[in-house]
Length: 82
Image (cartoon, rainbow, N blue to C red; front, side, top):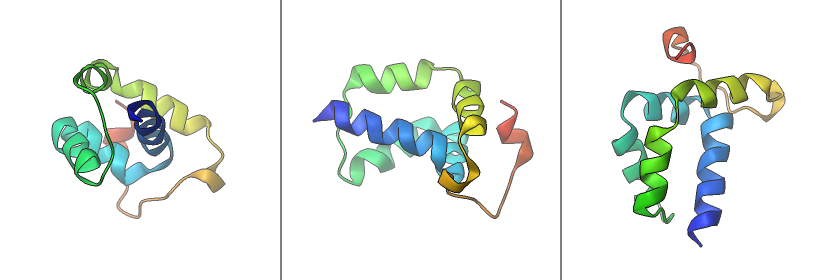
């Protein structure tokens, strides 16, 4: 079950700008909220997510067709450059 959760989380990181920004600003809180909303993550997965360079998520998000993105109306360009 946890692997499905990681797939959903990665999907959110690359398609949901607001979630990605929240993750960049405070990964532990973003991940806690994700788990509290009913998803499972192992300690190893959490550690791996927090160790992944932030620019990975931004670079992948930039490659996704905008029609698949969940837009945020409070853009913070400085977060996208990380």
